[in-house]
Length: 107
Image (cartoon, rainbow, N blue to C red; front, side, top):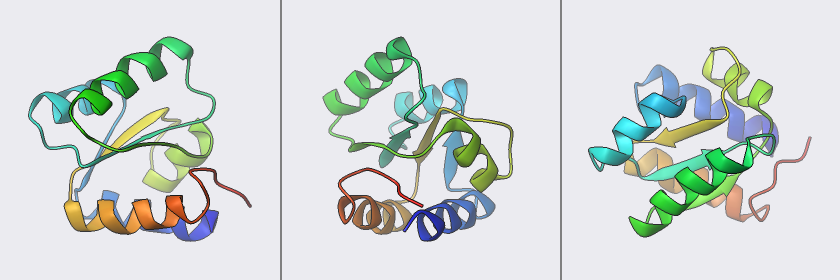
């Protein structure tokens, strides 16, 4: 499942449908473009609290998945602790994958 999730995240990144990193995710949330938020397991408590609370107030689903290294690798970037999916179709499929595994990523 992890491979399928990270492959799909990489595809969404190449399609320009991912905002990653705190500044880009903040902008996506402010512009109401975020459809789904992924926060890594190793994200700091303040980052989790700030972004999860913000997303939940806006009705945006939030999932915990993988590590910052894995997320960065999937997106073709350096380590990232947070990413927002900005396309509803990608968000729907990614959410299906995450729900099938209760928001946890296994190898």
